[in-house]
Image (cartoon, rainbow, N blue to C red; front, top):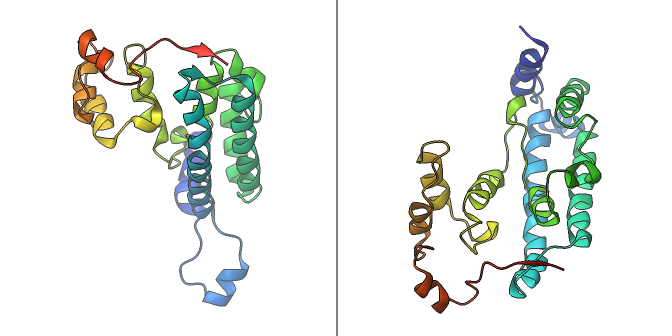
Length: 212
């Protein structure tokens, strides 16, 4: 069994709280890694709900996010991450550290490192997705909506908060590398982006974006 496989097994089974522990005793014990992960997903998702209003202000002006908002989102995620990593078991933290070293070249992704491959808008949105699938960890599902957004954003003015579960389902059912944007938008009830005339009739249909 490889090191990663062993860690995955531990994270899935070994770090859970004993179900037979008395209520009073259990309340005094730190929660297991599974409980920490569930709390992390909830807190990141709640933070995203708070940021949606800020994002909408830029969208209403048909602008992409600037560095300030991207850094703010990154810092909010980092704070939540640090709080929950501190509650994670030693073995769990070791697994996360090893994975991050292999992925980012450091304990956690730095903002400067993210800027090498992502623009401020992408950094801001990705701050509110949780991954860890390679470690067998549960995510908050927002990454699926970002995948759909990235697949259609060149021809659609929709943003991640506009992506529905139905659109995610259609996207996942498509053959890898062959994205049918019309089918994805149809799942939401939008007009095909290929029909330029009808797009002009819809408010906010312009795909031109500028950075603030």
